[in-house]
Image (cartoon, rainbow, N blue to C red; front, side, top):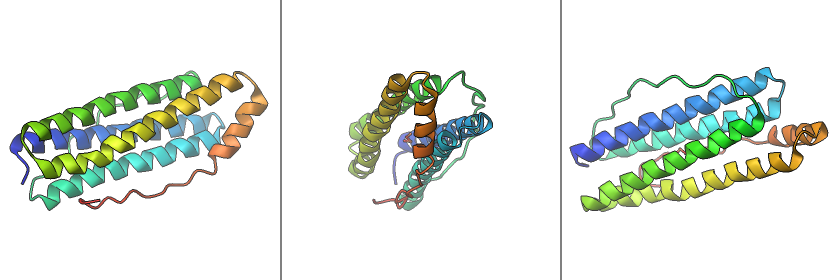
Length: 172
Ligand code: OFO
C-alpha cells in the first residue's frame, strides 16, 4: 500500500491527467470546426494519451491495494485564437504537469516509497518528450508564419498521427 498522503496526491494527479485529456479534446474539437482536421487529429491522439496516463496511475493504486477516487473535471477553454496560441498553451500546461510529477517524486522520496518513485520515472521521462514535442510544434508554426501552404502541408502531415497505446499496467 502507498501512504494515505501519496494516495491523495496520486488521485489528484489522476484528475490532472483527465483534465489534460479534456483540454486536448477541446482543442481537437475547436480545430475540427476550423477545418484543420490534421491538427484536430493530433490533439485527439494527445487526448487518448492523457487518458492512458490517468489509467496507468489508476492501475498502480489498484495494484497497491489503494483506493481510486475520481473527482470532477474542471471546465476547459473552448476556443483558441490561433494554432500558435494553442501550442503555447500546450507547452505551458505540460510544464505545469512536469512540476506536478516532480512534486510526486519528491513526496515518494520523502516517504522512502521506492516502488512509487520507480513507477513515477516513466512519467518523468514521458514529460521530457511531451515538452519537446510541444516545443517543436511551436518552432514549426513560427517558421511557417502565415504561409497558407505551410499550414496546409503541416495539417496533412499531422493527420497521419495515430495513437500508440501506452502500456497502462501498474509495473511498466
Ligand atoms: Fe501530457 O502528460 Fe500526462 O502526464
